[in-house]
Length: 211
Picture 1 (spheres, rainbow, N blue to C red):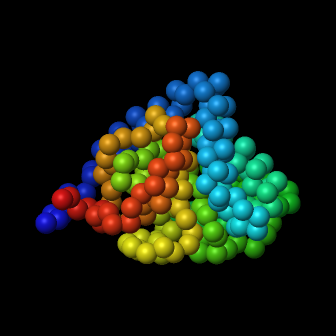
Picture 2 (cartoon, helix red, strand yellow):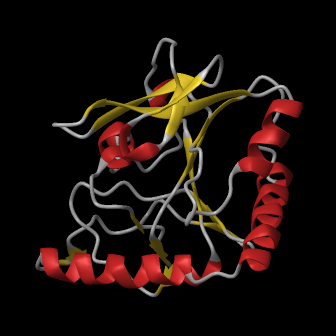
């Protein structure tokens, strides 16, 4: 029987996020480059970059795993690449924008196209997501604003396949045994690191419960 677990405190999440971000920052430069190539190879090998596919991809910041090799492969394979754009800072909302035309620095210093029509994640085949940490059940913790969880809320609680496929990209050192999942968290379908590609089942307990 499942029982309701108490929600994690804000301080617990802040402390966990600090520790996981430190792990991510401490990855040496040479290891970062090798990891980025390995992750790109795994993403391509999974068949997600088929010609014509609509791919959601974040343009990585310095401490995140470099998505440049994935972007190059996706474009060379004939994929349409869409990147996140924040559309409402107050309510932490974002949509996806075609990667085309001149670029600009958007919120938090993240690069994004200067023009274009945004679209919902519902229209994408795959969304490759950043994260601060992940656990063995497929839950992720991000930077704390909840942009991805809100943009992907339509996927919450689904037990049967519905696009888009949600895949987190991370260094192996960002993994923990269990994250304090919350009711609004949207779990991953896949997790790709330099060491492995993990597949997560749909028959997981909802956030906030324990066996």
